[in-house]
Image 1: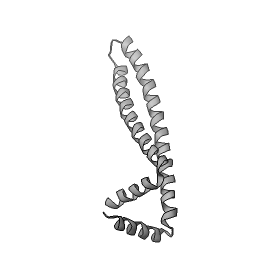
Image 2: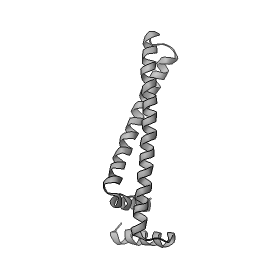
Image 3: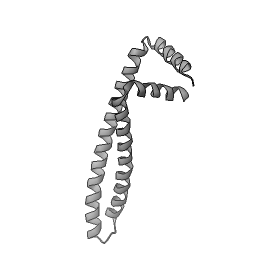
Length: 116
């Protein structure tokens, strides 16, 4: 997609929303920054809970010779920590982009939505 096509789509979108590109892009940037910050907080909360369960279930599993429900909780919480840490890192990288260059990220966001 060429820059002229992207500008045409952005201008068309702005016309339909009754705004200008100079107003639309900062609003998109604010919205995406807030979304990234909320995602980071939620991921962090789940990571902390999973880490707590991981430590507790490790101690209980060790006491019970690695048998029972605590061993299952240990496995699930270990997978949860890994999964949610990856999400935390991904959203942290996205947030850094939105903070460092909100206009560029907003343009990339619009282009991504246009491509489908």
